[in-house]
Image (cartoon, rainbow, N blue to C red; front, top):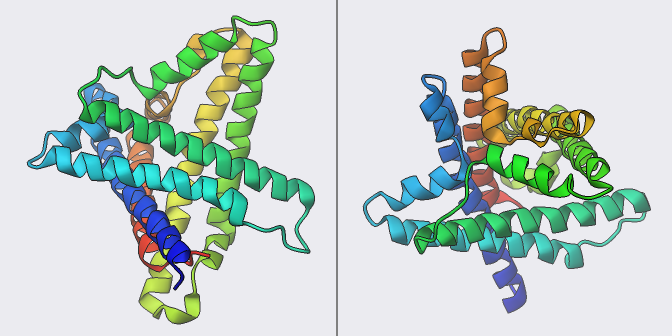
Length: 267
């Protein structure tokens, strides 16, 4: 293996390992949020960092997690340059995929930055719900703000649809050299991937809907993130079961990321 290829593989696998920790811990927090509203406030990325830091050797583990998230961001940005357009691929789809790599990298870089702030004990901002509200408040100050907020919501919903597509078609299996895996591992990849992508699709559908509702009502308080999504699910019939299912789905996605870290093709 060439040195450049080796570092590319190390970067990718470190990133998927970090996602494993993030999603498994988030999933556990979501499941525990079934019991009290206080626990629902803990179902956030920032609480993952805080909880990890409070453990024995927590600063070391949090530092490793931050490094892993930064590696994943770099891997997503690297994919922009190493992913070639196939002959049968639509140009528009190719551009959208390139844009997705960029946005995904930016998202995980921000996550790594937030983790670093926690590690260095810098005061961090609020919850995901508060973040969504702040974004919509900021954008609505401008003339085209409502359209921008609605556009963000639409993009999030499109992303949610893509998650459901992955879950339904199991096209994520193409990322693995299936012939090199035994039947048990192939089945584990398929099951964890489908359940994980479904849970992500549910949450992103709700978050996208919140942004669109905020634009329609010209009310930034309608926007929100994961915590507001959990609150909305709790108000539905069988709400606690829905939240537990989403939490279990996040745990499954974390396990799927672990399988990616170990077995995914890195090209």
